[in-house]
Amino acid sequence: MSMLAAVVSVVAAVAWHNGRHLLPGPWREAAATVVTVIGATLAAWWLFTRSNPARGLEGAWGWTLAALAIAGLVAVAARVSRRVGAAVADRRMREMGSSEFALHVGWRIPILTAFAEEVVYRGAVWWVLERAGGSTLALWGTSVAFALGHVVVARDQAIREDRGVVPWVLVTIGATGAAGILLGLLRLSTGGIWAPMGVHAAVNMALAVGARHARDPDGLVASAAEIDMD
Image 1: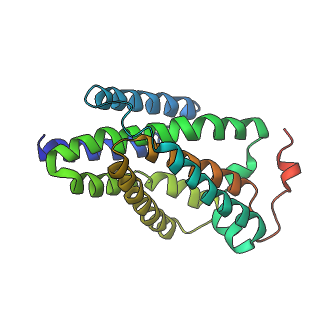
Image 2 (image 1 turned 90 degrees about the horizontal axis):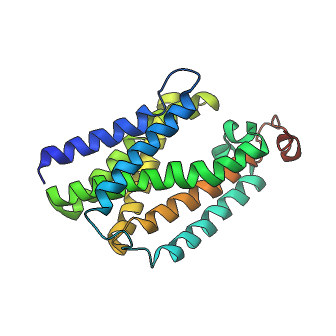
Image 3 (image 1 turned 135 degrees about the horizontal axis):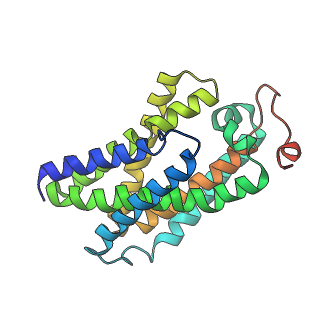
């Protein structure tokens, strides 16, 4: 596999990840879902026709449960501590009705986020980079791509939360880059995408709950009971 193919795969993944959040019009969410599903399906087909789909599945549950426990503690801390709550809070989570939030946690995060992103980054892109330059290139290349893929998400969150856009984007790039390295190391140690996928889903789901119920540092957010009323 050539280095050109490696570069193209990274650019394509970053464009796919950011582009689905830039779609215009009233059907933006539906269109983003279609783009996500198509991208993930193609990546899964590419990966699973070239490697054993069950590889790494055995050890995934332990890592997933451990990640859920740790992220759950952060969610609890966000409810108790104003400082942690200020860092974790997300207005979009708080403004969702209970049914929409259930859909978000039960469908969007595990399937449209964790599965889709892992099968793209630690799956297809990893496969291409590993054959172009080995495991080190795969680890660092997918981590950089994962970080850059979150630029638009970070920008949108900064606007929602009245944060400085540039500082928040830089913080997000650093955090997701570090997360990409950890997920990549899991990919290396288990040999498959399932442990990274499980950890990715567990952390995002727990932090979504934490973001929804975070203690409001300014006392301006409705209580959880008020938020849950549709």
